[in-house]
Amino acid sequence: MSLGKYSILVTGVALTALALAWPLGLQRLESDARAAVLFGAAVALLNTIAAHGLVRWSTGRSTTAFFRAVLGGMVGRMALMLAAVLAGLLWLRLPQLPLAASLLGGFVAFLVLELTIAHRAAGRPAPASR
Image (tube, rainbow, N blue to C red):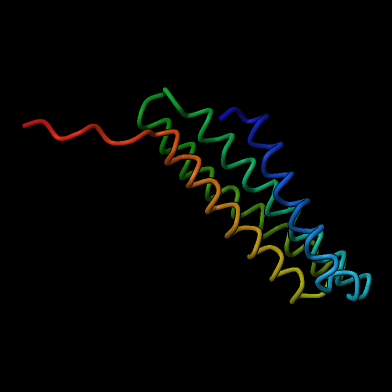
């Protein structure tokens, strides 16, 4: 799946989740808690788009390039996520629990989606020869 299509897909998933969360209680949160939820969702969204972009870039390249992009990219993305969380907590003064819950929930949901897409793209294993 192309990076553009993946970006549209995950943005749609995030917007749908937020739209469904609104009547379930998101609208009752204080404005700073809602901002924390949106901030966490945005960080998770950008993280998954970056992850997919790195995998797409490394496809068809050498194994070394693949591992550098995927594993090195993972370290870089985690550092950027930590910086974003610290900025949200210390600079923007967002509440901790809504930010953490949104970020982790989005991260897990997008990881499942990313792995599902990667598994489907890899195709089914060839039947064993006799």
